[in-house]
Amino acid sequence: MNAAIISMGSISSKWAAEAMKKYFDEVDLLDITALEVSLGGRKAEILYKGDPIKHYDCIYAKGSFRYANLLRSITSMFCERCYMPVMEEAFAAGHDKLLTHIKLQKYAVPMPETRVATTAEAAKSVLKKMTYPVVIKMPSGTHGKGVMIAESRGSASSMIDALALLKQPFLLQEFIDTGGTDIRAFVVGEKVVAAMRRTAVKGEARSNIHAGGKGTAAVIDKKIEKIAINAAKAMGVDICGVDIMESARGPLVLEVNVSPGMQGITKATGINVADAVAKFLFEKTKQKQSGVNAADAKKEIKEKMAMPAQEILTKLSFRGERMLLPDFVTKLTGFKEDQEVTVKAEKGKLEVND
Image (cartoon, rainbow, N blue to C red):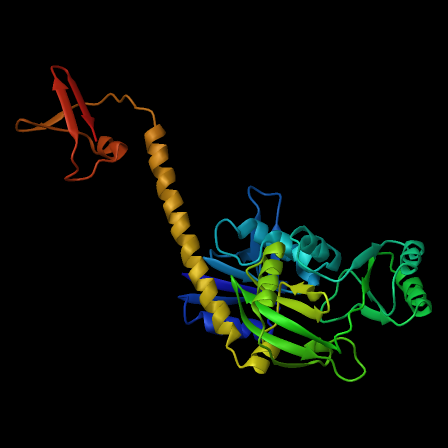
């Protein structure tokens, strides 16, 4: 079996590709910026560096929010013919905090109280009902970017006036005081393969590793693990990073990263996350291939059973007293050598059934 990783060429992607070589016969690391979608011809195509992309049994597609539409298009076109760990809808929801919270809400995944406003006036009306500090978020953004904390109603109003110039919705979220810490759980399939506690640097509220946060290995309980796995299912992904805060109300999911990095959590825990991902991709691809082969076999049998009998005018050939049928008749019936059949014969008529 062969596989490919579509990404921006991050170190994490290179680690995953290298680990996958232990399991797959061939592994390619494809640059997402060299891909394009061709539509309007006889069929839709994905091109890589100008040529149609070759067939893969497994494709692990990942990338930043800038490529969400491209990733969604690729997944939509390839998900039925090969195994892909991220569903097409996940690329839109995973890179939009509003859509993420809507998905989590549908699956009853616990999260901080969140409100959405589309205008400055609406947001200021909502602020009257909230306690401070309050978290203000942009819908898109990763690594903690686009996340601000307002200590008072006045500072929140000023931030909203500035954000209103961008003319896009923003989220107003309750502030949960956790001392600048949260948990990143790395979900692979039905389990959390690694977890780390992230702690923000002094003077910074965001605990993201990319924002300077420090990671240490964490041991999580069954409740947190179940919440992380449910969050992954809600988003439609088999591989992701789930950020969780521990509050007085219990664990609350902040975000689901559908293109998680491996460097920080590997360094913090000492766990070979790349190998866990590679092995999982291989096993799921084998399952996918088995299902495809079984489905193809059933389809072939069904088509043969539904195929109407064909009348053909031909001449008979004999070898001694034995009757020989033309090659195309043998191919049409699908009979094999030494196959047991029932023969009905009478003068001027011959019928052979399996």
